[in-house]
Length: 191
Image (cartoon, rainbow, N blue to C red; front, side, top):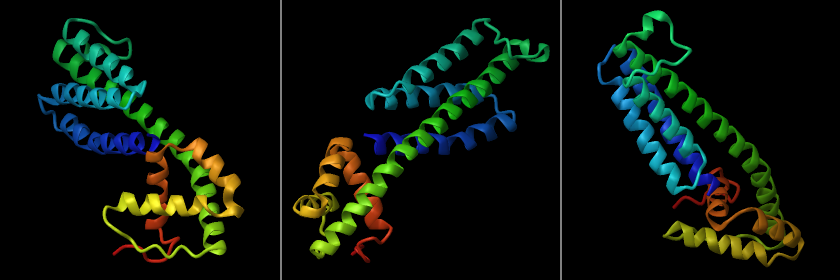
């Protein structure tokens, strides 16, 4: 699930620039778009069971409270008028959530880097012991599963196989295997 969460966060972060452009251009629907973005991110993160969903909900609530008269202590006097306060709070909320998303992506990357390296070592061991001659098939997930099963039969890699089986669920294992294959560790597998 780490890979899915990572990709989801990166997709959401990719939308931030367009929202900032709305703010920069003084678009009146900026705050409403941020509320929608937060709501969509919250729903997606809830499905992934990520605590970041609560941050999105809290920031959405802060924006709604600002529309009801609440003023964030970070706002200047000029930003205390209702419309400006909502826009400025939306910008602050967007920044807080984007920072949290980036921090989570970095955390996931650091965890996956270690596992990616171990998986690459296991693939190298598997290739030396018995060449990985599997040709890509569709659907790709079946082909990746066959590679994983093959790696499980390599005696020299049993310790790594056991470790990675415990550390990675099937979704994350497939995510990393696909990434390694795409980077050409197994030659040119793309059909």
